[in-house]
Image 1 (cartoon, rainbow, N blue to C red):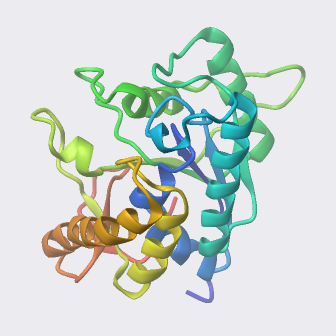
Image 2 (cartoon, one colour):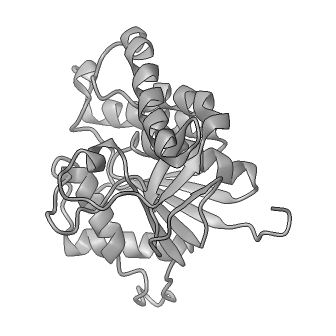
Image 3 (cartoon, helix red, strand yellow):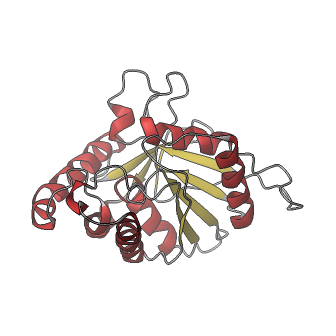
Length: 246
């Protein structure tokens, strides 16, 4: 570990809360090994799971969602969370959005990208989540934008979260990250921003942690550890690891 080169890692979700249930444990391990981790959301997530914020103006809602996501990021040890504004539900891969995403990747110059979603290439399933993954797979970061040099990440890792695993057409994960030692830190981060039921914080604390543990435990069972997060690797190689690589 001491001789391994440090990496710059970009973690991308469709909505501000998406990286936490999908990738928080993986992010913690990368932060702990000294990698530079940047989070990015393609939208503000204002159109989904926000019923508990009814009555707020659009600007107030966006500020609330951003503050919650940034607080969750600090729990993981990440202080750089970038917000794009592509509009959600539906998220649409317009030419303008694709060029902006490509330029954002050029600006960051990540060694690897971790996507919080699975691309569903055959069926275009997954709504905003699947669209975000497909956009990342096609983002033209290799092009010259406004005189900027192109950039190709060495690898893109796609999360095989519970949504992809429940779909009838998907390829089983080949890589599992052992997050047993950081499961409680992951749950703490999730409770700041992840709320798929749009319920009160008290209710979220009651029903959220058991679901997060159960999902990670099922992945861990397959990987031979207590808790894990699952991914599709760029080279389709079966493995259980402590962090992702190039």
